[in-house]
Length: 231
Image (tube, rainbow, N blue to C red; front, side, top):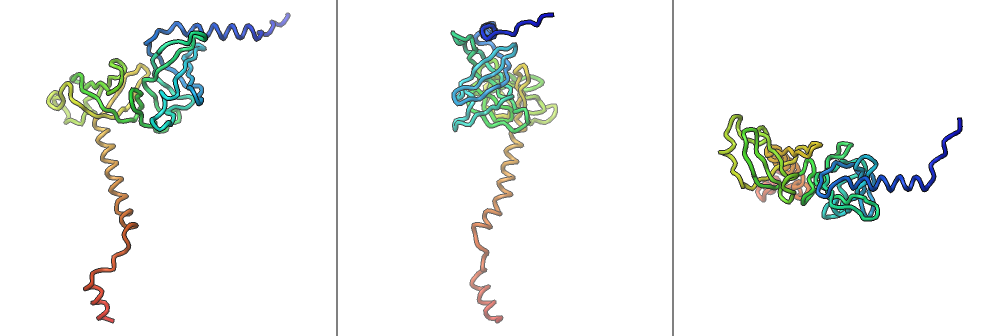
């Protein structure tokens, strides 16, 4: 039985071009889940699935000091911002950066990029029996709204949340998790715990630093005279 001829370079090229064109099935403004596949000096590339590829501007996934917030394998929720006319490649804008596959603590992000474990500011937009909805500062209205469950509000069990919070109130919270659908789970209690832990660590380190900074006391003049008299 004759062997099938191997694909020529031209056929592979056509196949690749066709795959790129498929990415146009996405609509501008659509939210997608992607996996980072390459990080370069100029851009960061992601797999959209189905042999489709997208691209982030490097600065969109970097902290103000230039540190990249993702690595190969990182999962990112993004929004389709447009398409390259020649290749059909999707241009992406990040919405949520998830924790790295290795479980390492993510870096704190600023602006609209939301990172699990980071601290955010926002406004209360709705108060329900099961929790408080917060619109995260700088994030899009739909994808940037998170829920603080009742157990994470720091209020007594069975308390009326409307007596502790008001719509439009400025709040700060910690991002506990962001699921595959983009739902954000926040916590007021965890933010307070983090602050208390930071204060405790600072207090624990304080005496040691002071001891190093100040030499051992020789006592008062009276103490020195008393020792001299005994001699």
